[in-house]
Image (tube, rainbow, N blue to C red; front, side, top):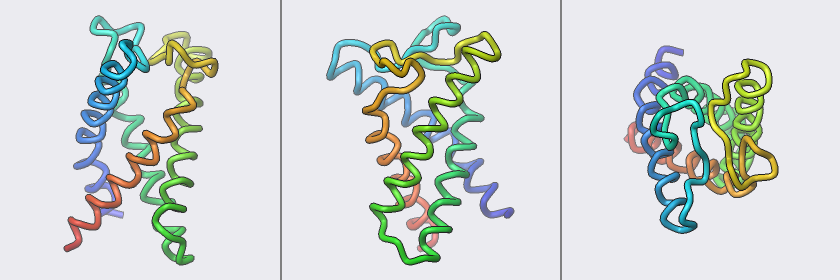
Length: 139
C-alpha cells in the first residue's frame, strides 16, 4: 500500500502536466481547446484537477494489478482502465457542475458536456504511459 501511495504521489503532477500538453495538442489540431475550466482565470488549466488525477492513477493501477493476475494483455488493460477513467471523468464533471454548482471543466464541443468521446484515446494513452513508467521504475 505504501508503494502504491508513493507511486500515485510521484506521478500525479506528471499526469496533470501531461493533460495540459494534451489540451494544447488538441488546440493545435482543432484551433480550440478540447476542454476548458470556466471558473479559472486561465480557462485552459486548473490545479483543482490534481486530486482527480490521483484517483485516476489509483484506478489504472488497480485495473492493471487485477487484469495482470488473470494474464490479460497490455492492450486489454489499457482499454479497460482507459474506459473506466473516461466514465469517471464524466461523473466528476457532472458532480462538480450539477451537484456542487461549480463546473470544474467543460468539453465545449462534446454533446456529453463533461467529456468528449475522443478522450477514450487520451485515457488509454495515459494508462499505457503510466504502465511504462511503473515498469521502468521496477527495472
